[in-house]
Length: 88
Image 1 (cartoon, helix red, strand yellow):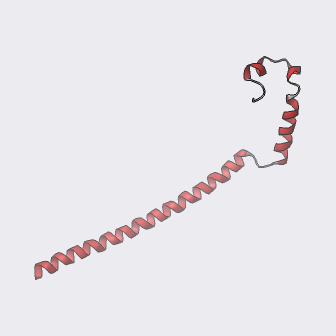
Image 2 (tube, one colour):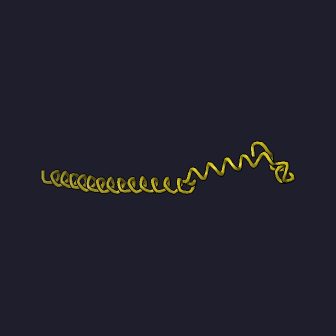
Image 3 (cartoon, rainbow, N blue to C red):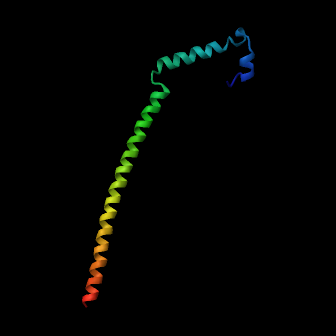
């Protein structure tokens, strides 16, 4: 695509793009030696991303639980303060 514009490729006769067959051969050799396809690499990346999201979600739930405990304790302290204030 860098060497030939799309108009030239679609209107060329078969023998005019003969040099292009060397590039196709090189690409085919490359992909036959590198068995991992882009889809496999993408799948592994997605699996890793899902793991990170799950860990983040679990951390968020843990923080939420801690915040709930802190909120409950602070409410108890406020209640105790008002009770002590009324008794004095």
